[in-house]
Length: 341
Image (cartoon, rainbow, N blue to C red):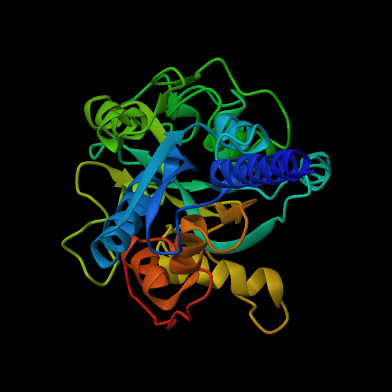
């Protein structure tokens, strides 16, 4: 009888030990302010997220966030494969993607955190710094191939259009929102191949767009406005001086009085007009896109801490400082008299 009891006790101890061992395997050690986690970020927003992470890690010294700055397609693939549980991109999940998340019994959290302006840049010596939205569409689809078709007196000829990488969110925005799903022209090219990088110093494609346009008078570059922010201007009413940012008009003829640039207050005008056109008759900069942060992780880990930080007042102030329009912080609309000629 003693032998039977001993065997039963040994079996219980063994089961308990195995259970505890398995629990240790799956238990989380991170908290909202400590631990190590990887996240995936659209490379268009590398400067902003690098700043967010820098501030977060300085506040919470036991935290380590490793960003994977990559293209639009890869960001969502990494989330679907559970390679990461938090991403930042320019679209919400499709219904198919939501179903895949639900099938894994994961909780999806989605929050709009900012509005980005997709900017067009040209060489500083190019005199044609104002374009209509129709002209932009025709340039991107290859229906306009020369600067002389825009301005007969232009000293420039063939137009070359440059963006970052083939699978970037910028390409998707051009295709869906500018070209209305028409194919892009043969004059539209990427400056670099798609990358898979965790180091912002290796994210060079958007910087390459700026450098190319700065050295090629006939070029147009397309990129997120966060790459053009002038860090020395606390008012966010100017851009870097290497290139000229194009003013865009919805009218048939672009003038300085009816054209807009991706300043925060002009993006705010556009958003206000879209939501309440009767109350806000004046529209603003037309090429805007929303930025979302998405998490499929359980609440309580480091991803929760970062998610909440970016959505917080401090995180939104970092977005404001970057030149983008924060989604959860009011913007004062002020009248600015500026010559765009």
